[in-house]
Length: 139
Image (cartoon, rainbow, N blue to C red; front, side):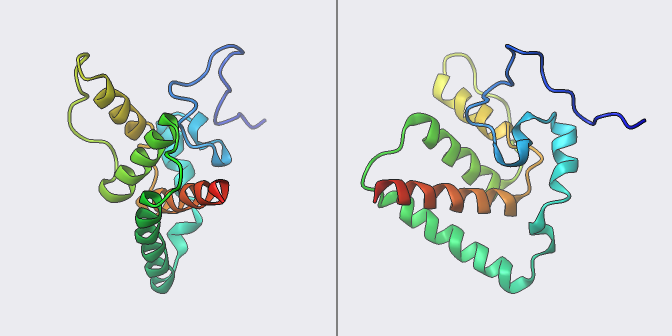
């Protein structure tokens, strides 16, 4: 008999920052230790050098495109963009969590820390995908 790697939370309970956690393949619902294992099966681990260069070019273009959006995204979307950018450029969250007096800093840090275990290439691809969806919504 096989046991499940992850038991869903009881009804009525949701993971912290559920609205900003990654939603693709349910990654945001997995504990960080299992999320890291899940990332190992990422298709981005098998990308060729030319594809990696394409991803980097798309990521850089998305950074430019996000500043040219006709409408400012909502706060949760901005927080998601921030977290994906930090994960894509710096990797897992590091440093101390900001104190209680820095509410915005705490939200930013927590959003970034929610992506711990996500590879930088996956974060870049998700950032590009989010910016493209914002561009498509603005048209």
